[in-house]
Length: 355
Image (tube, rainbow, N blue to C red; front, side):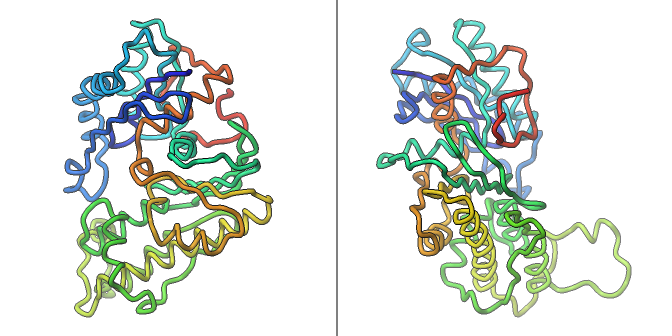
């Protein structure tokens, strides 16, 4: 039985978990920073890294206590190496390195995106589909489409060329005066809105499997807010989208519903093309936006192959998913040197852990 302590601090969640065999959660602790960042309408990097430093020791101690294990019962320590906010990543990486030095346990630096994929292996009713699989990772920082040909073997075929899906949710939510994070707030508002009230564009890009949501965001802004006069605007005024004045006739619920419908349509259309072109046996949906119920329903209705996704509590950032990915990497012989560095950008590919 492989037992791994995992640490995740890539963005604004301080998390630690103990995972056995890549499939069983012994403990899963997450200290959220949502309240700290709500006033900014998004994650403030310096605030995030400071909060990680204040919380990480207690979070790791609680994870070990709930797992009822001592360090000598572990096989390895895993930590998110990237991608993410460098300041936040360094808090988790340095803490994990200290633990590895103190305990003599091997250390594994794990790709955050791979962690999202392996969150599915932690679902109680999960059964692994035959390869190749199509992985659609949609979150606040990422919109990635990958063909998974075996454990740890990926072909990246597409992704966002501008705003990630979750980022678009946050920006539109802020524009509409909804609370942070924007995804859940827009989904709640959309529940009583009319998708046909606004005709927003579906993303079109040159790349067959690429995604773009900046045009959709701009369309919502034009429909929802009072447009500036013909006078020349200052840079400050042009960038003040969160302070834009809403139109008197703007219906927040309808705007939310139409935006959500357009964004999910783009994701579904792209996933359907890719699943067919690469003969995928299943589509694995992961990341924070995978919690969106409309997206889940649309994918299930549009695809001829099974659609699988993690339980809601594992959709957003957590350390359990890092531990699940680490178990497979550990068994494959992967180990990280103690001098590895944080990686702000790190795409999944066939040589994800290579030079």
